[in-house]
Each structure stands twice: as structure tokens, then as C-alpha cells.
Image 1 (cartoon, rainbow, N blue to C red):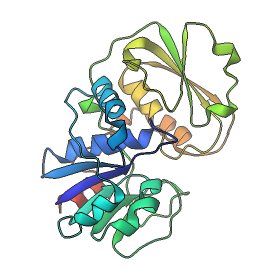
Image 2 (tube, rainbow, N blue to C red; image 1 turned 120 degrees about the vertical axis):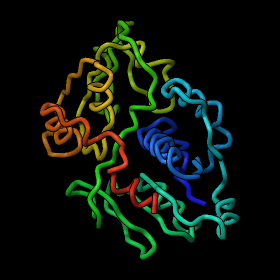
Image 3 (cartoon, rainbow, N blue to C red; image 1 turned 180 degrees about the vertical axis):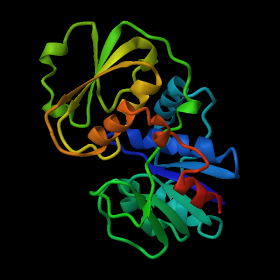
Image 4 (cartoon, helix red, strand yellow; image 1 turned 45 degrees about the vertical axis):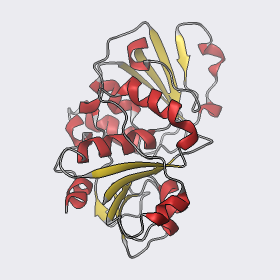
Length: 250
């Protein structure tokens, strides 16, 4: 058995890693038998289903084992894909199979894990971008509002965004049909953003994009923006040429 595994975050319920996990699962299941495990997500299935149905054109399909439940798969799991370091750190002791791991930050390495990454701040062994499965997204229209986003909203002065024209990001809330509600995204670049999705989604779904850069260092925001300005969005869309996909198909 193969699986994409993501550890549900109580403190940060809605985040990019959850979407990445879903999208790699949706792509891989076109080619192989594979499961999506959202570990410790049992008490949050209503929220997960809502997030899924708002963004994707296919119905939700996943399992919500506990960490202890993973031990029961010890003899069945042959290879898993993990796309965030938090899941790696919290679940590695419960997995006894080969692991394909994307590292969005530095990690202590283990012999049964192949580490993939693309940026200087990631201590990877194999090069790969973390990519989006936009082909599985619903078709969105343009709304009348502006979405205010940042990896660290605590540093954003939201007082100037209090009118009904704005939707302000909150990590514990799923916004109903967000991409149908908005025509523009304002992203506040306040700290290192390891694998930003919003700039790619904005371009893919024809939303206006404004970056307010208070960080001024090279990370996924600046590097991806440069590629997008040069019409290289395909570099960030999952395909069968993605090294992590190839590894999972072996």
C-alpha cells in the first residue's frame, strides 16, 4: 500500500500543506492505488470536507487514522509521500516504510527517507519543486472583494482593511467559495515563506495580485514571482515529470 500522509494541525487548521497533500494524492491516484491519510483529522471531517468541496471538482476521499493507527499499517505500507516537515517530525517514528519527503525547512535525516527540495534553506538530496494540482480545482469566477493574506498575519496592520470590500485571512476558518468571492489578492510578505501557493493560484485563476514586500529576501515568493513573470507557471504544476511523482510510481 502507498499513501500520501498529512498530520492535521489543531493550531493551524487551514494551510497550504493540507492542499498540497490533497493535490498530490489526486494526481497520483490516476496512476496507482493510493490512500490519503489525514492523521488525527477525525474530529475535523466537517471542516476538511468543506475545504475540499469549495476548491476541488471531485468529492472528498480520505482516511483519518490516529498516529497509533499508523502502526497497524506497519506491514501494509510500502511507501508514503509527506510534503511538510511538521508531519515528518511528528509521524516518522510511526512509519516503517520508505518515505518520499519534501523538506520546506532543514531536518535531521533518516536512512529510509528520500529528501526533495529546491531552495537554499532546504537540506534536500534530490531537486524538486513543490507543485500545485490546479487541474483539480473548480472553475472560478471573479467576485467583488479583495483577499488579504500573509504567512504571518500578526505582522499585518489589518485596521485599513475593515470594510466589506476585504476578506482577511484567518488560519482556522474556511472561506466559502473564496475564489468566487474575490477579484484580487494582496499578499503581505513579512517573513520567510517556504512554499507559497497563493501567487501561483492567483495567476492560474486570473486574479489580480499585489505583493507588499517587507521581507526583502529571496524565498518562494520572490523566486516564484520571477518565474511567473516569465510565463513559467508550468514549473509549479504537478505532472508525471515531477521527481516526487516519479519516485512514488516506482
